[in-house]
Length: 257
Ligand code: HXC
Image 1 (cartoon, helix red, strand yellow):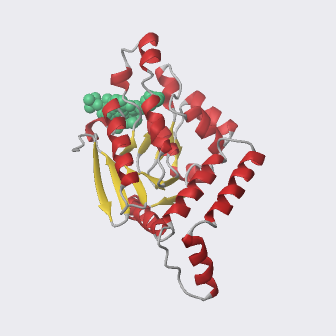
Image 2 (spheres, rainbow, N blue to C red; image 1 turned 45 degrees about the horizontal axis):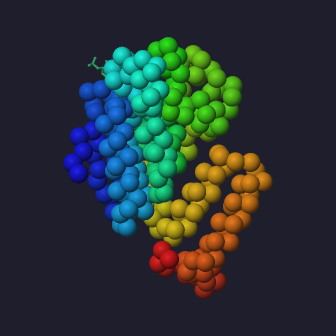
């Protein structure tokens, strides 16, 4: 299916999805979110792909949900159409998604980055939840995910004032894994995806699922889920191969079984 708002390519085992509405700083309209979900679903089903990188342009990862598309909605329309519901699907994909963020990641753009599994930031990245300036609040997880990632005080400051965080502050605040020069951003993110691709893919997906459970449940339930998942890895050939290879002092040859 040809996409109009995103570009999709493969760099070896890594799917690279580029948000592509440059004139609107990649503002996230309904078409873009639907195309992104379709692309991620196709990449999940693609046996050659082990991880996905999601990026934007050097100026903007995404400057938010499309304000012009939302502008005229009233409560009844917003509520009954539940127009944010499709966004939630982005967080439900199985393969790891690395957000490679340069420039603005604002509002829904910041929320989209936080739906990904790892955020790599370029040194020019700016994160913010400026919805308060539009007379609204974050609506795609910002009040929840940002608070879990950076803590209450900083999340509250950002959500109540709309202040942006630069890349250094985002790293200090645990919003991003790493900051890299903007020119290297996509290559570094692809390299990270390629490193994940050398592992056993079912085990990578089990690990992703287990980490994500930490955001959904109590510590005791999370530990129970982890232990059950850990034991489940013993049902795979790759778990045995990994341990045997270690004892034989060689690299594992994972078959993804
Ligand atoms: C629609 C947008 C947009 C957005 C930018 N544009 N952000 N269009 N929705 N979120 C458009 C502008 O209207 C303009 O179009 C073009 O992109 C370039 O933007 P400029 O403002 O001219 O660029 P610049 O002066 O460099 O300023 C960059 C900026 C500013 C600081 C990022 O664009 C900005 O403040 N954008 C809005 C950020 C925001 O409030 N995001 C939160 C949205 S609400 P024209 O046609 O004039 O050239 C949200 C809610 C999420 O995300 C809830 C869940 C979905």
